[in-house]
Image 1: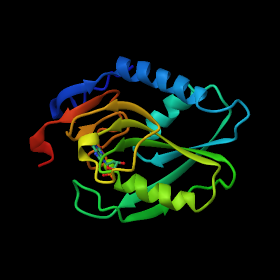
Image 2 (image 1 turned 180 degrees about the vertical axis):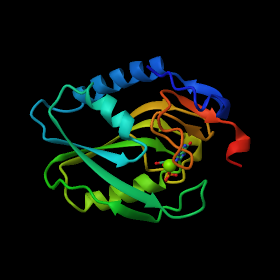
Image 3 (image 1 turned 90 degrees about the vertical axis):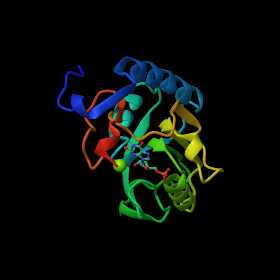
Image 4 (image 1 turned 120 degrees about the vertical axis):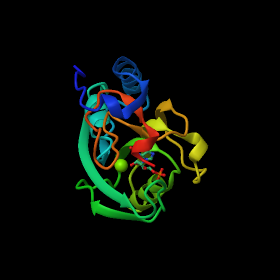
Length: 186
Ligand code: XMP
Ligand code: MG
């Protein structure tokens, strides 16, 4: 497990290792399980592509019947900060009217992307919308009303990669969350 060393020279610091991820995701699974009734109809919506590994591991820690769905969105704007103008690349497939929607995100940064996604999905009349994010950068929040119902880790304002998160589509297959050396992204 986690033996890929191909990116070793690019990583400045590991901020959450594989064991910590596993432990916290297991706890999140328990929190989420406790947050619903046993017969709730729950759609887990993975926001592609960053949340793929998190969704896969988290789903196995949730002791409720869930349905999987996927949505791919892209935020226009400068490379380091999202604009909040979100384009749907791939919409979800399930009809969520009257059902519980659990949005699974990799990271909430300014909150603009999530705000847009939540506003749009609310118009489809789900019974509830909850958000679980693996990572949260609260210092960067612009959309103050946007918050996760379940949050894995609060992290400082540093650009992180690994465990699903990328820089220019690289580093997603690292088994930990790490900070990239500045020279690689500045
Ligand atoms: P906003 O600002 O709209 O952005 O909350 C959320 C999206 O921005 C990406 N993002 C990151 N991706 N490392 C990444 O690999 C980071 O440190 C980072 N910060 C933000 C991510 O796609 C997220 O969904
Ligand atoms: Mg990205």
